[in-house]
Length: 66
Image (tube, rainbow, N blue to C red; front, top):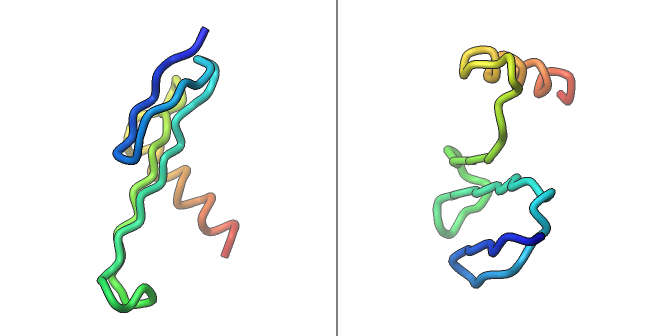
């Protein structure tokens, strides 16, 4: 079975087993390397998570990658 997925640029069908991991990045025009930028990631909380524990987990993951 599929679900119709709509985005600003169009729409398409995806299997229901697909998860949305959308990333939106906004930067000042004319200088993509300038700060600040705004990054928005779509994710799902784990069953035992709340927002605070999710943020803590994400910070720990970022520290591992730096």
